[in-house]
Image 1 (cartoon, rainbow, N blue to C red):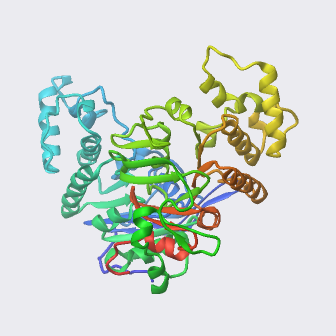
Image 2 (image 1 turned 90 degrees about the horizontal axis):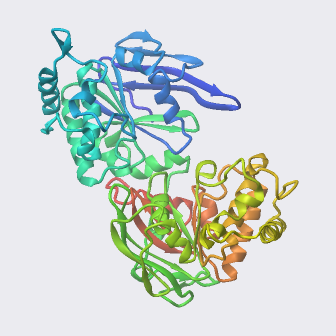
Image 3 (image 1 turned 135 degrees about the vertical axis):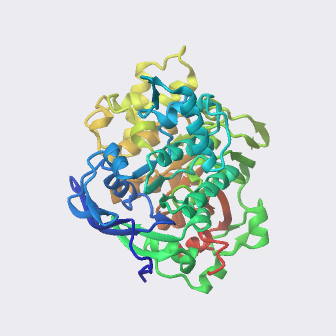
Length: 527
């Protein structure tokens, strides 16, 4: 059901916005109304079109079709500066300011006040202080921006919008790196700006935050607007279903999604008949994480990964799946919790530590954190093994060739030669090379973050069949995927993540697609 507002007129209107790139229809007839004095949240999964819509609004992209109206007048922003001049200001996930300059300089950069032909430093500091005090932020504006935490830096970015008298404030994933107290501070500021009549478009993937701040919600899916709703009228379950395109969940599914006390405490698994087996009955623990967390990334959580099992992590984008994987691999440093491997506490402060402990990690970012496109299949394949061996002990070329040939054959990698640059291979074959990179290190635990994203159906099946075979031989697998049917099909246990914390742990067969979504939307008073 689409909601028609009783407000007299929107401050910003998008009418039938469409934008296509080569072979991809990113936006298709998207409309949106943004009213003064409200927080309007834009929700949707990865690839829904949110970022493209923001870039159209801010003049980065020119729409192929459609119209943008500001206060009833048609506009065509040609750049972000042009959009700012129209009164549309944007604060991005990554604060785009100069940390070496003072707070005041960052607020006024490009618009320094002058007096007698020179920069009026005292006047600038006074105005900057007054702008921040309007948001109830009291800090020394003469100190470098880097002196303050990220939340304050976000406020500084927002204060620039007040300086240029913005009519519309767009916040693109502003809370992704903030902790709870910092989010509360940001929301307090946003509520103040809302009371002053500003129209705020808030882009996020956190459900709890959506309901904490939103007056209205627009859901996007596959480049189209699914609908516009009053937040008070849309339950979390309904929101998640609309985002992923799933049918409405029923109460029976909700009931089946509740973990028993034994499952939650001991991490139950299921036998071949689907009967729950609690605790250590089937698998011996390889890795245990207790209270593992990182400020602004993952709330402290407990996790157990057992020998010879495939543990699935399910959840929406931004739920904390990748953040948990990176902490386990030492790619990010945890600031709470402890990890034990084979019963011994280990300090995994770097990927080198994790590799030494028998952990491998296939990143979801194949292009930037995985394949080195100009290097050959052989060179890409032996990188992790060489890192573990050390730069002073080069792996002989003959051994490299032997390993490359062996795994090209074992994984069915289609390449003219092991010396072919990996960049010339298909996505599926690149992924197989990256999988082989870690298999040659003979890991005890292999973390797979979206290993089948963007590859064809046959390659997906081949990779997952091989992974399942590895589990049967005793290897532990931590499997992360946005494709719920795949997670449900291959996992021995599933941990469902929501809003940067663990929402529950379930044995095989306890969940279906509908009940996973129910767990993701847990805690809803309307469900």
